[in-house]
Image (cartoon, rainbow, N blue to C red; front, side, top):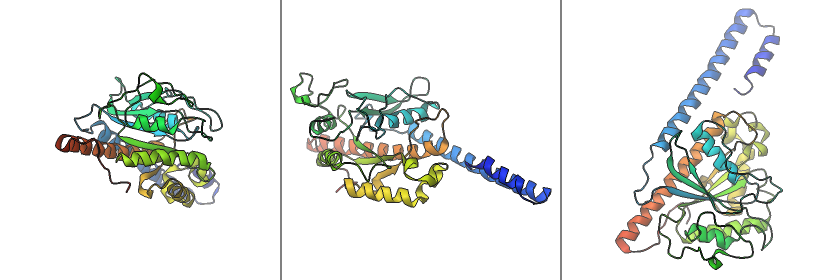
Length: 317
């Protein structure tokens, strides 16, 4: 359907008689319109599901922490999700180029929705990107401290000084302070050539999240850059052999199950929203929301019945 005008131009050059051309044109247009209406219905259905989702009463909102290499699309993911809920391009979270330094220098919290569009009980925590080298970029111990709820909002990261040295360190965080789902962000077009140094840092954070019983998902961004077939038609993402290869590569390198990796595309240059982009992101968001809520409910149940702070979630074993 993305090449509707190209197809109609091709049809005009063919030597079919007028009635045949008219029939083909109308049939094709009807198919395109039907597909667009179906996508619109699915989008509205998922938005309604998320807007009306009832989270565990033990927390006011679910917390998601995004981590990954510089330029992977962490900030763009937040902008894309808010764009969908606001139904317009949203650019509050600053983004960085793949080869540059991280724009995110402190713990930034981004709620989803607004007074205008309606708030939903989800908040995303954006942290400094991971870089090559032991003392470059975000320190893994600080990310782990953030998972546990020790880091206050607006804390400015120092690669050479960990949060424990800061007087604002939250020594006894509650479930409300903690992260409820770790979201790793990796670019599909770079996953094969990503440095072992960065991958190992991500695996270190994952291991800590696993020890906490915390659910972990992967948003594999820039799928359109990894596969030319879906550049013009994102609805074919699950038909793409190239994307499938990237998902398996991501699984092998990070040790993440296939069913916890979600191919997505973020808004970057676009000034108009696209339903195919929205559908991929909404499906991924739906999965992390239910996983995070399951985690909170299990933590709440164990805490009240056994007095324990630990809990488990069974995506990772």
